[in-house]
Image (cartoon, rainbow, N blue to C red; front, side):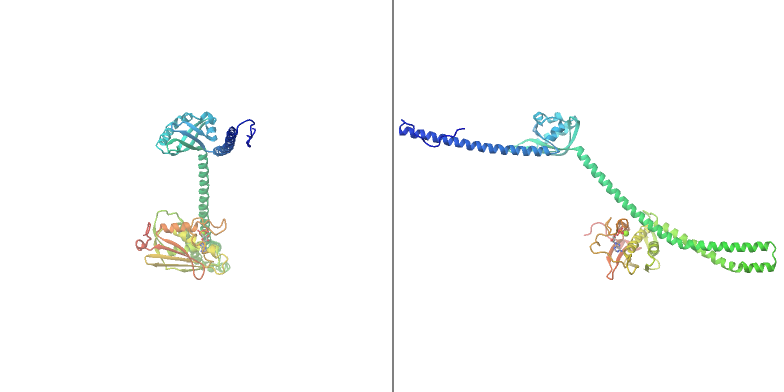
Length: 455
Ligand SMILES: Nc1ncnc2c1ncn2[C@@H]1O[C@H](COP(=O)(O)OP(=O)(O)O)[C@@H](O)[C@H]1O
Ligand SMILES: [Mg+2]
């Protein structure tokens, strides 16, 4: 384009008036042309901006994996994103103006009609399941719908955003699988805690049984020797041996010694088997799974048995101090409380491994309607930063394979189920002290902790 003349010029033969009018016209043309150019530039700039904005919106719509469909008030498609076009199997321009209903499975028509009428009432909808009909069959989506308004605030349609249900299902399945995995891990841990305490119990009981059984075994051998000698002697008596002969035999076979040893040998065996019988009875009583039964039992005997079974087999140099009444009868679940006592003793032993002084002190008293038992050790005590967490399930400071972190949390629940409490503290002179309180006979109602929220 050639530029306009910017300098006035003289036309030969024109009058000065006519010439100035001509110059005015040329100047106006000049101005108009300049305006046109400016408008053109502005237009081009706006156009570029518009194209940019459109490209941006298109890229956002294209990046969406969710299906987006804008409909008018009658449910006709006005706009779609590429995910919707893929799901419906049509290009966007072919879809515009078509009723969305025609692209839905028949059993979604009702839900879609409800969405349309809700939009007229200026209401959206959430998690409505619609089934699109696509090239590869049905394509279920979970839809959220929002009302679309014009500049004057009139509802002119709705925007549907649908997430493929397959994806949701997969996410749900993944979540369910992760949850299942977690549950299994927890069960394994609970199981390994059970196995560990069973292992401790078996080791403790085996250790306890070992003594009387070897006692019985040794005495049985002695008895056999006595029987052999007595039989040999009697055989000679029945064979008609002479008095001199028998006197020699009696001395050689040490018959008098055998006879006098017999009652003590038999008594020892009897005592050993009684001890075995008692241990088995204790095992039955304290380790059985009595879920519902509450019975009267002697807490002193229970505590002594728990310490013996757990401690003796594991820590030969442990000093145990019992400060317990002769008997301390209470009502409760002996099996559960035995488990609690074994857990506390085991923790004390774990804590004292490597400690210079290994002393376990159990004290029991009845005080104000409660039975209070303390278990104190001479380990390093509980670190202040973890003391608030030791009753949490799975909390442990022990290495993998050694601790499951379930002992105290299980114990806490077992004690609470019997109207008791279990607390932990450090002793001023070092070591940890666990305090167990339980309702005493007759004092249970008055002193049991209140249930429900306290005011
Ligand atoms: N007597 C104790 N002395 C010091 N720390 C203890 C004692 N008893 C328990 N704890 C702490 O409490 C944690 C949780 O104990 P517990 O629930 O029995 O699980 P676990 O014995 O498997 O670790 C232990 O790992 C330990 O850190
Ligand atoms: Mg433990």
